[in-house]
Image (cartoon, rainbow, N blue to C red; front, side, top):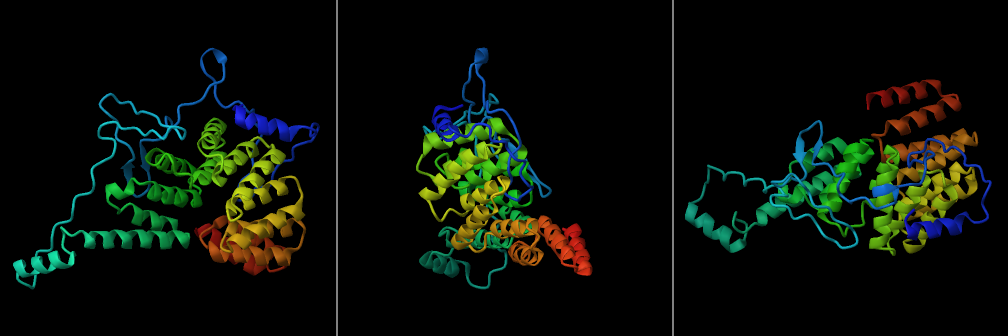
Length: 369
């Protein structure tokens, strides 16, 4: 294992031999499956590091269209980059050219020379660029609004209308990755978030989503590599330790994962995702009291974090407190009405409370999503 992670792992595991790993429940944040912690091998069977970015896809295929993420150079090779040195591939023609400017309107009611003079003075003409900036901000705002409402397909349609120069930015690729992640399209989420890293190698935001996508895909090599590079780049980042926690969660090392999630929370108490993942790990250990406390801490940081509402509902459902479970599932569904998983859990809670017809309607709605 990487030296920095191995030392922390060894310190945590001391005195805990003989503990039997429990199989985690199917929670939204995801908990791991058993695997061997060997993340890369070099020549001759010795351990080594993977070349970061080499697995990044060159395109994202969606139901809307296929967008090239990085154009290959003449030799067909792409240079890798790392968190540590901040280098980025500079192959010729790597970024596609910006989208062409739309043609000017043919019909103009004022004299052309007078209108051009006014636009030049106020900076709203095509040369001034203000109109283009406002259009760009409107597109970004519309997409962000739909993403906050978890209308992920609508958000993606808007993002794919952006000019190439704006589409291939770290922020936009982060949001596209989030949209795919919420749609449970983890393959495309991984591609978009790896593109984010290649575009902005210093960006830490979004790594927690990428690590969870890799967790769902059970890609232990890529996740271990990501964890090592994130720690090497910024040990004071909450996102970095969250990635490390996901790495150990994938191996059912729940106590070790909790250690790193708690470290992430200490670095940034407002980092909601680590609170929620800590709750998932406590649920895997069947420590429901501490799990509920973690979910409540997450809601104090962000009351729209639907995963925490779901986690509380799942705990109450397992404790056969079906009324409380129904309440918390409804709260989660009110935030993310596009989730079929939440509707299924709400339907089960309604059936347990004797509301058979409401349960059937809820489950029917899940089938339509």
